[in-house]
Image (cartoon, rainbow over all chains, first blue to last red; front, side):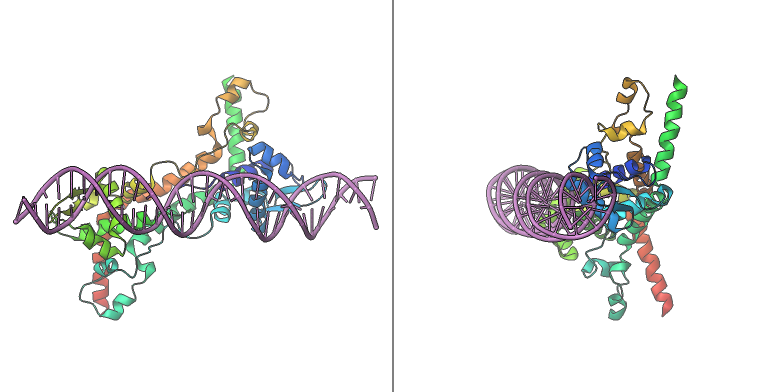
Length: 161
Length: 161
DNA sequence: ACTATTATAGACATTAAAGATCCATAATAG
DNA sequence: CTATTATGGATCTTTAATGTCTATAATAGT
């Protein structure tokens, strides 16, 4: 299991837009050149980001892309969910099998067992908890926080001289 | 991005083994029947778990599988890493491109820029942090903790009557 | 209004990974 | 020695990610 390259491209593209001045449009040529990926492919990704309101796009001469809202309001989670989708990372495919019966009391009434559906899988519950830990972290980190850290790193480098 | 079905099968199989008495071997027939998956496919997964020391396997009459160590010493993280592999969820594919130059000071010496390799990508750093949040949670949850919670749930159900 | 420029959307091709099956082999209990 | 059970290799199918191409629509500048 790995995040797709599209996610990598999307995040880097947004950093690039974040570095540009406000209300300046960056064309797909500049973006794709900077990231080392084809225009065709990157424009698919940018379209997704536009459809989800992360960036704005303007066609025509001097057109291109810009962030649709301040960089501190674009979290990593926002971006990942646009590109990777919003399904759970783990879904129990097994709820109708014998397996889950074993986790319920052996002597209970049949209708109680029926009520134990997909969402009651204890394994899925753990995996969902794990995912939400990751989400929380991604929610706290934004495009702006990366830009800020880049500035910090620059001043550290400067001090070393 | 989603966890593979193999991970689902592996976790459910381990719960099944955890429910069986110690030093009792559970055959692939029983396991695959319980999970609703073919013997061939599940045995591949069980082999992986054996190679990584999660289960023991015994061929021959009355053979089968058992947990290789106590259920409280088998964490979700152990299992996920066997099945999904140990690569990072996110790896920056982009370190040699212009993108990262932008994140470094524009006027610095060329050799300092060279030193900024893959591992210095600030995006990758955030993503790695997120992954480690998830790992920590998975490390704290074990096969035994699921079995315990199943018991708890049973007594809750009993109280409702 | 015309033209060059730029994003959009759809169709399509390629590649890689997951999911699944089959068979020959090796190990074990009785 | 035999029936049983796991193992490993080869192979096939399906699905998702990756990538390209082309026709269309929108825009700025003239």
